[in-house]
Length: 255
Image (cartoon, rainbow, N blue to C red; front, side, top):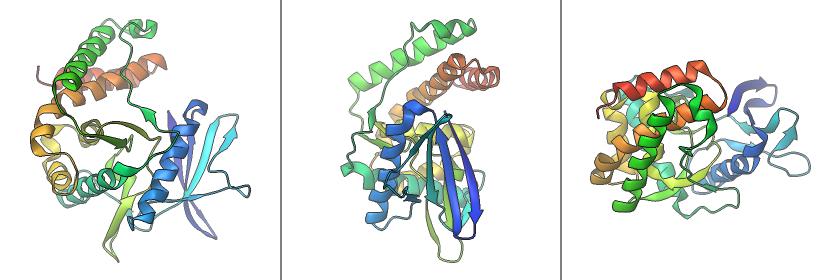
């Protein structure tokens, strides 16, 4: 859905991002979310506006945006100490964005189990339908914490400056709103699953708005949904590699 580049120029270091045209408003919401964080003394990539003041530019390939890169190195999701930073920063971002509003924020949407592209492979429709049903039951029966979602909170979306000890997100993705545990599930998926991210989860619980009991109840359901949504997107874009990764992850999950 998007691509990114790190650019070094005479004037400094930058992050350039290109998203599909339909994601322009959510991308601008993410850029303004970064401004919101900076206004609360939380390090985040500063958007670079055009001379006319626009946050993004529409190109033939999609919506294009540039932010100043925070100093420091990318967090390593395999390192236990970096996992603590990762979880803690995601929790801080969730808490700080609880009052953030922007017209580009899209409500969380579940995949359509009846979509034609789910016939891409025999297993896809059943996997998506099962995950959507479980997530629907969860949202109806459980009291979940909703807020602004980062969208793709991988470890390398955050940096740590060893000289100052300061850490923060390079960007806030194409932002939307939904259950915050879904963002945590996305981070768990990037970490390689629940068996590989204990320190990240501990860091989040120490700083974020989601309680441990909610996390325990919702994470397995929303992690399965995360992979089902990856399968849905891969089927839509006819991406065999993405379908293979989603199938492997779903088959490895209990239940």
